[in-house]
Length: 104
Image (tube, rainbow, N blue to C red; front, side, top):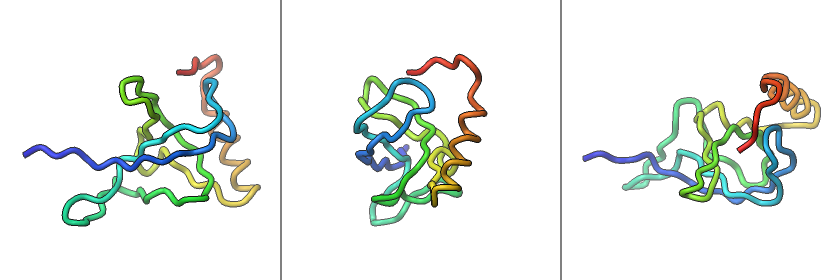
């Protein structure tokens, strides 16, 4: 029997978008969660997102589902801790984007 990985959806406030024109609140799905009988399923190196924490996400938007999905478990959700660490991480991700990259 083929099973799909569980997804946990979060409502998040967008503070800044590095690509595209995203603002306000959006739904972000993480390929992680609990399966029957209460086993935690995570990608290698990944952890469940924490309420109240600030993250930098690498996502793709699904028009069919109406939400953004983190597309690289363990790498596509970087927790930003502290102002200095957060600013440096965002700058590193911004520099990695090709010039003129279109949004969603």
